[in-house]
Length: 314
Length: 250
Image 1 (spheres, rainbow over the protein chains, first blue to last red):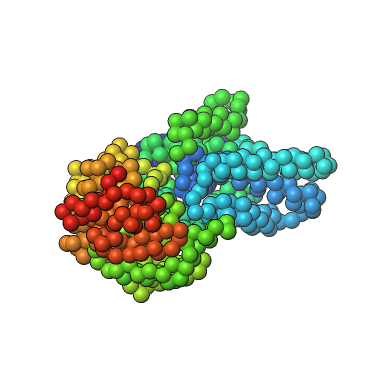
Image 2 (image 1 turned 45 degrees about the horizontal axis):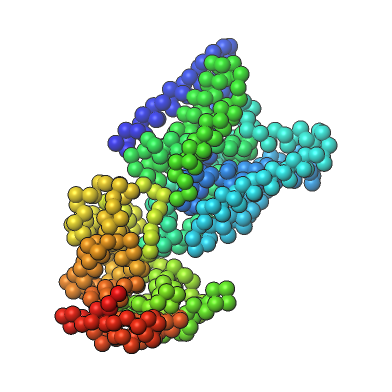
């Protein structure tokens, strides 16, 4: 049963990948495969990163509604990038090696996430209402600060960061692809090895403590992993608001049980289907008439509302 | 034997526990009773390491309750907190399997499967094993949680107000079950109770708390008197004796 839903999804993903690579392919195959292959790899990478980050965050915050992006994680990353451009200037920023910039941003994001969300999660009982409000306020704060800086910098610098502040699946920053692949793979291995501990964390502070887990420490470890995954996906394609919520909710629907051993691969595969399949349809089938991010946010937004209305706050 | 020495607990300048020292005996059922706000649940939470120690020491058979002994404690002491609910959708069997986590870190071996089956059988949950928890009644769900702590196979079992939200039949069934675990399997059970009559009927040892202090302790038959209710609970209820067991008239 468990294998069945996973295999069906894997099959769908393969079909999507083949369509993505071959639909309306004209000209030199070497070029097409190289050009599209990099995009495909980036999409799969982003899918796995976003879905895993969402799943981990939902486990440590013990709810099925919040996601790192709703809590303002990727807005924070954009703010950090914007601040960097503001301080160094576009020329200085673009002169720095991409990898160095990325690692500095990543370190700042991890630190900020631990300070902001670590204290929030470390409480004896996690208050969901407070989490939601804090997340919304953080999100607005980070976005407002970003747009405030936008207004202060000169137009050429603005162009440098503008690329970083919107979700974009058509223009993926492939400079970072190698680094992102390594970083994401390592992080995903850590997440996979933590799967049993994550199952226990999902039972809540009291039961996890009873079963001998150090809840606060595990939550911090998971937050670091979430921060790395969000940083990678945001650096590659920009902030994606509802993608994680959408794919993890679908994964919970089709999964036969809610262990992380099932949900981690399943949600990553479903994220791949949504991104690769959606991009193939929108880019080739509908001739880029609508950006994929808009469609995902539209559907994901509905899922968010449906979850809120159906489950309430419990 | 659970030893609590000089335990104090202060929240927002309010002293909840005042320099408590108490020894809970090994074997049998020990009930913590007292009026609302006496500090029963705070004492429970400290022994269950749900609250960090501010001052004092707690040890379970010489094993100190501290973060560094987390895993060893989880094989010695199982706790059942009040009102457990979680977002994960689990079947009864999956929940009970979590009880084996301290022993196998999630990789169930054959002896763990045997223990899970034994727990399901002991609590009459075999027919419900594959049902999801959210489809069960309150009493059944509660039983599944106790079965999980049973599967944990610890010498000590701590329960915080387990009779909340249970009807009289479910309450009696649960207490009888705990009695059986104490008598037949030699487990030590510490239980926070609201209902003095249940404590008098099923416990071997009573510890009475009032205003963050241990007021008195002893055998239920000697302890539950009109004087106790007047002094500790501040109500002049009558106490009848039925079959050598004191009974507080409501």
